[in-house]
Structure formats: C-alpha cells, structure tokens
Length: 307
Ligand SMILES: [Zn+2]
Image 1 (tube, rainbow, N blue to C red):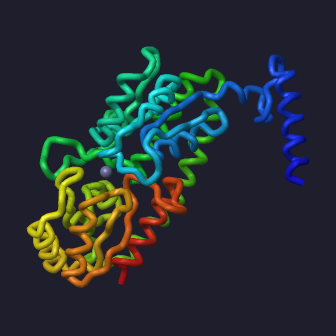
Image 2 (image 1 turned 90 degrees about the horizontal axis):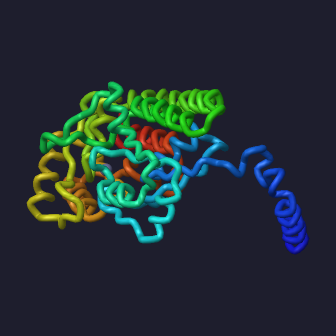
Image 3 (image 1 turned 30 degrees about the vertical axis):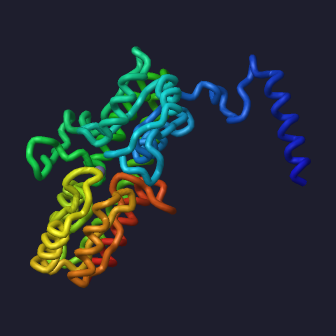
C-alpha cells in the first residue's frame, strides 16, 4: 500500500516535471509556484501573515515555537532564509533585538522589514511605556485590538507585492478578523468570571500590560528585571510580599521564560498560592495559533483567579 502510494507520487512528480514549463503542479492553483516568500521573527507574526496571506504566501518564522524572543539568537543557517525573503515582518520596540540586527544585516536591499508593533503605534494604537520609563512595552498583540492593526498592515504590504490579489487579501483579513472577534468575546466572557478584587496579574516578565488594559485587570508584579538574570533571595521575598499584600490567589509562569520562573515558583510556594500558565511571546504544546493562545489565557484566568 505504502509502496504503491510512493510509486504514484513518483509518477505524479515525473509528470509534473515534464509539464512544469507550462502548468504549475501541486497546489491545484494556477500560480501556486509563485508564492510570496515571507519571513517573520515570531511564530505569532507567522500566524497573522498566514491568516491574511492564505495560499498566496509561504511563511517561515525565524524564532522557533517555545523560544524566548528577547534572548534568542539565530543560527547561521537562518541567514539564507532572510536573504531569500520577499518581505520580512517583525514586531519591533526592542522585543527581538538580536534577530532584527541579523535581518538588517542580511535582507536584500529592495526588500522591506516591517515592524508591526511600531507601525500599529504610528497608526494610532495606544502604547504603554514600561516600568523603567522611556521604552515602549513591545507586547501589543496581547490586546487583540492590536492584532486588527497588525492585520491591516499585513494586508496592505502583501497587496503591494502581489498585484491582482487585493480582494483576496481583504477577504482573508476580514475572515481572520471574525475569528479574532470570536476569541476576543470569549476572553471578555471568561474575564468577567473574575471578581474585581482578584483581577491582579503576577507573572514572570512584563508582557501583560496590554492584556490587562483590554480586560480591566492590573499588573501586580513581574519577576524579570533583565534577561538571563539569576534569582535572588531578596527577589523571592519581595514577590512573596506582593502576593500576600494583594491576596493574589494564583501567579502565572510563561513557558518560554527561564530563570525568573524559579523566583515565581519559590514565592508562590512560600505564599501558598497556585502557579498557573499564561502564554505571551511563544506558542506551547497544542496552542499553535494566536486565537488559541487568547482562548488558553482566557480559560486560565477564569480557572485560576475566578470566583
Ligand atoms: Zn516578552
């Protein structure tokens, strides 16, 4: 059975090769061989681009699922992907600084690098400055309203590069916006299960001010002070204090975050509260799309803080 499938596949391949000059093969679409090569930094951005680009784009993310974009460093093999890209989408606002530096060094001179968060801000999405002051917090996408901006930017850029597909990209973007609205409604419904006094987020790194603003929560505390920093007893004691003062019923780790998780878990153990999981910069396990990420976070907020 398997051999037969291979034989048929091989025959189809031969046939395709023979007629490749006149008819495109494999996709069933006339122009399937002409797909735009899109490179993104985050898996999240790849998901947005697939949502808008559909069959017209071939998307590769440089930062793999589960990796921390703040600290991830590319391998030399990724350079080829960058130098072959027709367009590159990043987030920006210093989220993925090392990755963007490598993109800028290797992108072809006529190819655009689009920083979605910075572009969304330029188009009117209201950003939040980080605790330290000065720098804009880059995690805009955790407010689903920002992703509508991202979608519009992606639609425009793809339409410029693939003439005649404007209507298709618009249709895809509107379909994606409907999915986004469903996930957003679910998030609002789950957030409403959390009483006002319990709407406090304690997390490993400062990723959630946009989510908090969107659903009327508050960021109570974050562990991270800088990437790769070792946990100190002082940090554990400070965090335990916040958990007790605010009577926080649960804290949230993020799967891609490293050493700060130890501080969070130790403080949670000391205060006797649960450690739950919120997704921020990376997908995890079964969660391989942005709308699934929103739903996961909605479920986790209701499960861990609800009541
Ligand atoms: Zn982050």
